[in-house]
Picture 1 (cartoon, rainbow, N blue to C red):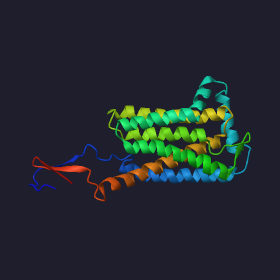
Picture 2: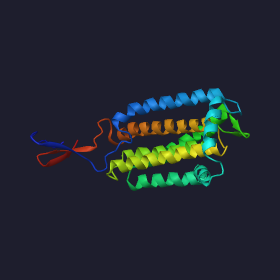
Picture 3: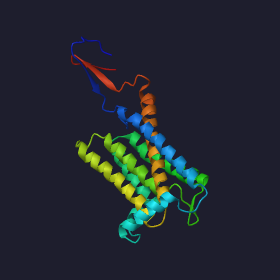
Picture 4: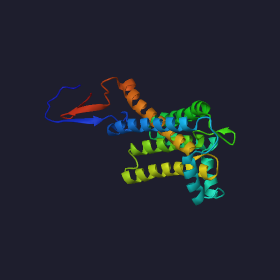
Length: 245
């Protein structure tokens, strides 16, 4: 650091300094949300393990959804198709590409790696472990819901911590829109008799827990791997002179 008089001193962020995915004040609540999501998955998984029939909660939620949304409506088919692998890959690529354009490399890893991890947990771990069937196919948790909510959560995290657009309200609206589309897909899956409601709830919980855990892990590991424990991502400007801190 350049020695100078302490009379005028300012800390200037480096242009390439690491920008956390989650704000400091959000990390505690994120941990609580992860824990709650895991509890919901565990409770529902034990309740519906090795079953192929709707439970009481499913009967209530499924009936409510199917009363208000017809399975043959075009919008339900469009929403369900968003969770198909080709469309999901396109969505992941779009969000990761936007993060790369903004030089948010941690966002690229979150979007691609987090979504892949969430889908892997659903398809290769939880579905075989729990063994719930729907029309002869493993259905708990919903893979479509897991994929769409993973992309939506990555989008919301990146927009919330983005520098552009500068209008905070616009970023919040865009984040909410992504989550609403994912929720719409979950509802459409129930309306079209593809999944029970609890399948989609579990898929949402897998996505939430995985994406938040990946974001927390990246925020912990990346700054230390780049800068070391002192995390020198800023410069000290004193009396017009600049030096690394």
